[in-house]
Length: 583
Image (cartoon, rainbow, N blue to C red):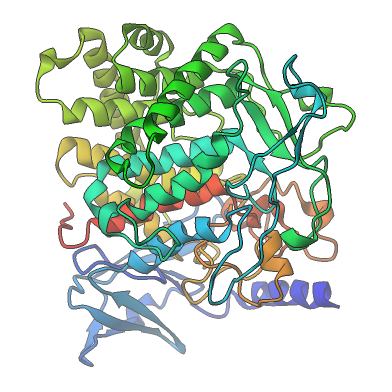
């Protein structure tokens, strides 16, 4: 019955959409200085749209253009509201439909803070102390077994190790080095652009009272787990800590499967090396809270890199795992060139050793692509841009280092200039969301948030505001000005996901899901259709192929890498408070 009613609720609006207008807008908020745009569906009577200011004055829209979607062929109207610079709530009215556009000086602060605090709520191995989402300790992980795929002479099959802490990876309860490292790398990249902002950002976690910024404290909780994932006898890093099969939709304390560390891989080991090298640098000023960590992390990073050099083809082969077989997330990747580039870059920044510079030069990419767990080259690119941008003396490092940095700048600007083409003809006035390839598994993170992050990097490197306007447009898309009308972050906006594919949110008996989670987003692949039963996707159109139901792991799951992109993007926007100008 529940599935039938949900299907009915999804299908009914489709039959009436043509008869009623629908105003799509950023449901969370806008800076006073940024452009204000809404998109109207279902009517051409947009000349009747009215704006009521906080003081009660009624205004007309400043401009309207018609846009035909290249994805659905639907006609929409992009409405520019004008310069609404006075903070407050603006009521938008069209016929019998009304909505509110919020304007304030820090529109992204609460959602940015929630997106980072989400990592506290999904900590493993500790009790969570929260007014709403309190839960007892689950998955202590103090008696984890070494799987036969990970066995070594000094750690044979069945060896019991302790591997606590870390974050639950996604909708499941396992912990994966590849994705954890990528997530930390994204957030480290943002941190290095605005350390003063993060020094002031508080997320109400147990460590908030210490001398270390809360973001770094949260990263440390996962890094403590990383310290346990390197084989101390040879330097290789286990790919993941996992149960043989995914647990059901139950709470952590109800999980009973044995957990294992499995297979040492070159990709996990290199990602580990990159993150530990960066952590060694970034935690150096915080010895008071984490004494000895930087030296330990540096040594472990170099040891891991050496193992990877000796095992360059040690890729993860899940189908080879037996006794027990393993069917959880694979994070398989059969090229390590991008991981070598990122790790060599991070280790060069840490040590200045020419061998790492030579490797970075060997593996540098030919084209900028937005960062994903399977292609981390752009994390290396961000490192080079940050490193070279901070230097004022061209003689401070070898010519090869300046060459790599210069290449990365050029690739980034080429990418960003191509990304912003056609925005003035787009359906939702944004760089993201205009092509079929913009949509798929995790698209809102990898192609929307990470694209915006690239635009902000380019903006910062040029010390102007050419690109930030377009990054803000991606925020508008993400937070409601899109084909579905959803604000895709839980707990925010007036239409946001209520049923993400996330075990604790489904099993804890609390109606609202954890706040601050970014769902994967529209996915025309619909790989989960067989799991949905009577519930069906509302559309096969790429930007409408989303469904807010727990069973939809293809469009409605959450994951730490996706939330890391949200943290990096929204915290960066929040850091612009008080200094925002848009060309």
